[in-house]
Image 1 (cartoon, rainbow, N blue to C red):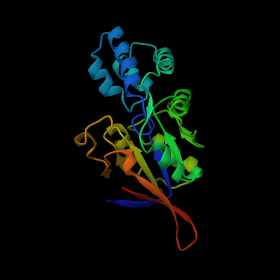
Image 2: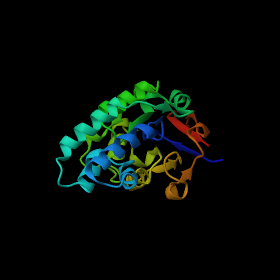
Image 3: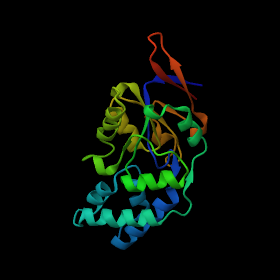
Length: 219
């Protein structure tokens, strides 16, 4: 068992709150085959990274903005198999609405669609791929998330499922709890703690001696 007290929680979306892996894999597999790349290698590089940065890395000769628009269209259309992870709804319900945010490598439109289809509440604060110039593994997305919550970076805990996200959160000066839904436990070994599943994580509000509300996470 472990526990940590924090001011707020920043959630990755895909692989943490919502299981969209089947759809994401199909879209990137199709893109890889069309452009002559190894689908397995593309999937490894793409998960946890902004689509536009994946395209720029793998195919710098292509119009990355046009490719992003097409990839987003395909992901919006492909919702088969999308599901909410067990424990996600309960965990979000236990947190004050102004103390959590979603920080995702998906576009804003795609993120809100997946949250809606999974039956999860729309967060008051969300950082999407559209809003940062450098995505994970750079710290900018998580730093923006802390800013939106009005918290210092070190007062945030991040929930992630990808090595890029773990690296980004650490570079932002945040504690990271990782869930092996997409990557293996050894691949997530740099996280501060590894959970078996999101259902293992419990949250409660506590009041410090100064009267300030804090979040207590237990696993």
